[in-house]
Length: 355
Ligand code: HEC
Image (cartoon, rainbow, N blue to C red; front, side):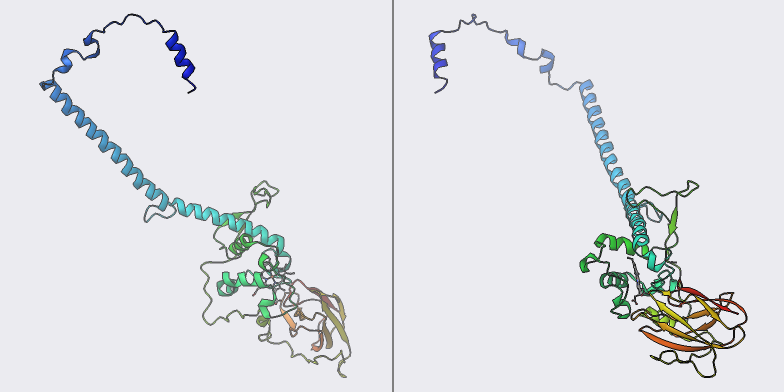
């Protein structure tokens, strides 16, 4: 009803129209030639030519699509028999390389202080050992240790290795655990780039060269036949036979150092918190003496391992944990200095000076 007034107005004031003029009929029709539907030889030839061209265009278009599909197939999945040509594989590898590089940073920031920058061990057990990497340090085991913490390793509830997995309250999330494991299991065939953890830019050394690292695992490693398998609990590896020539220790578990009557000098070596409290020991040169070795750590196994100057073992004491003292007879040492370490924690060091 809204257009009612408009219509009214139109009715009231009719618009004057020009007189209608009839258009000539042939203005809208094709020229007479167009009405000629008979097939001249030229037209027939033209039609044949055109449809031939159209077929070619269709064929070429199909060919392009088919070739594209084939080429893309090989681009994506790789040319059979030629390694390293697959885009998917390359993508996967790039992702893996990123994981390993991030895992390296996570390791250096969290684990290196106990297990060594190269996994060579320290307060914590060695991790870069080929025998261990072959079976013992498999992905599932690593996952469990990071999830449950050091207590999982030997059942030691006082283990100093914390929990790492965020599901058990640790600091590392699911992805970081995956990256860490990718690094711990990485092989030594490839050079990875050390990157700034924040910017992911490569880190340069003083000479301006990009710093790199390699994984620890040798993929070609096979244990020698008859090799001792890695024990489930790492400290058991130290409990096996002592090097020949080292005297049997006189153990007096729990006793506080009572020197034997025949031995004059008793020197005390105490171990606590992954360090020897007594690092500079004096002993008489040229005569046997005794060592009273005290492990003051309830949960951490230690021993005393006296070396000669060339690094060979002169004496290796028992490895034990728990607050306990053991007395050992040490054969005479020639005048000189003798380094000693804890076999379990090789970065615990001290020196015996025989004079
Ligand atoms: C405070 C020192 C400390 C830190 C930090 C530490 N660990 Fe440990 N780790 C240990 C000790 C000690 C053990 C041995 C467990 C035990 O017997 O108590 C151990 C055991 C392990 C084991 C088992 C080794 C074996 O031979 O079975 C793995 C694997 C391991 N740690 C990985 C890691 C990783 C990965 C990190 C970093 C996220 C890490 N640790 C950080 C001290 C540490």
